[in-house]
Length: 190
Image 1 (cartoon, rainbow, N blue to C red):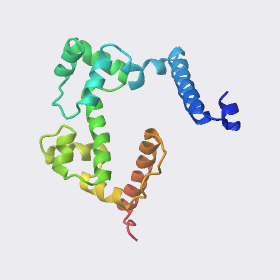
Image 2 (cartoon, rainbow, N blue to C red):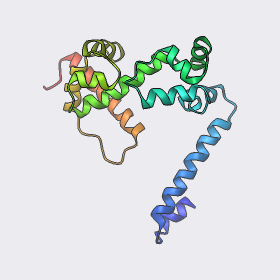
Image 3 (cartoon, one colour):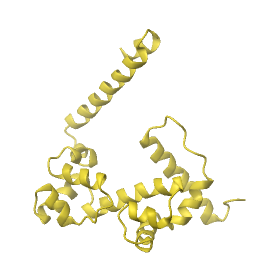
Image 4 (cartoon, rainbow, N blue to C red):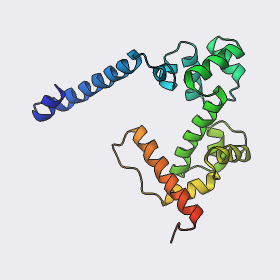
């Protein structure tokens, strides 16, 4: 049907193609979860649908600036601290605080690439009380200071319109790795 709609540009085809693509995507997700592989029983996508861990993930994503602890996330999930930490690690593949740090740093890179906030504002937006604490965490995760990342991101070509957020993440990660390699080799700007 999708191929037919794309070939036959009848009135409303764009709408039908979009809806069919949505259905195809949902069917792919269902098939993925329906497989019996161990890989399908782990990961954020699977964990989002867990009634307890999903609450914690939603909380972290919606309020990443909150001073989350394992205890407060466990309470939000209606679980004990130790049971929560164990189940989160089993489902997601990393500890709650590792996940939270990585999520915050991912969001911070978007703020830094945009370049319209001061470092302290970026730190606050992603849950850090000081730019020093944020800078230390950022450097631990990415191997470079936030300002260096921001300078390198400005050198890059803006992302293409229409690219998915996953595509943006992959493209920006690849570009950042190339810039980081050039910076270390001393060829940036030459």
